[in-house]
Amino acid sequence: MDRYSEVTNKNIREIVLLKGSPCVWGKCSFCDYILDNGTHEEEMNALNFEVLGQITGKYKVLEVINSGSCFELPQATLERIKAIIKEKGIEKLFLESHWAYRNRIQEMRDFFGIPITFKIGVETFDEDFRNGYLNKSAHFKSIDELKKYFDSPCMMVGIKGQTKAMIDRDMELVLKHFDHATINVFIDNTTTVKRDEELVQWFIQKYKFLDENPKIEVLYNNTDFGVGD
Image 1: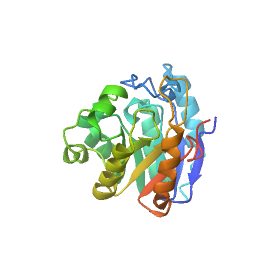
Image 2: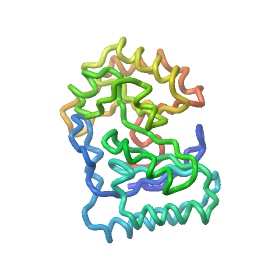
Image 3: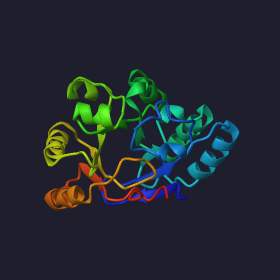
């Protein structure tokens, strides 16, 4: 599995995929990504320190991801990230968290002491689809409430059961309200949730212009950031 890469097309940065403890929620119907975790801190830290050792600081921007939320990384790993930020002169950080940790977001901002773009897996702004079918357990009442804690929504398109109208609304809201977002085109995995190939092709054709938008990163494959397998 690739755990270090560089994103060089938009928001140029180094990116690392680390191991944390199991996802606090772990019940999203579409997700088997959460299987990349551990319960033995010494082993996780050993792996994470090896991966973190590849960071050069060449772009002054770093993204740290794991199969859950940044709050599930071992404390020693967080301390090592903080030290590398200082050593390498990193000026901006990308992190991700589940809605369940929203009241601890400021805690992480204070800990690292540099600007952080905090991502969250929203998947869709359609409440019923997000929490009913996808089982995200992200029950925010408005975009303003979401933006109180998070900076960048991760959206998902191309799932059977989604509609074109739903995706159109999601793209409209993302473009209107956020300075950064990630659009994930769904890839079939081990879950029962399935890709809608017709919907995917419609999205790719209609929203091709997003490839040129510096605010939006579209992942057509899970490994487009260069990490994972």
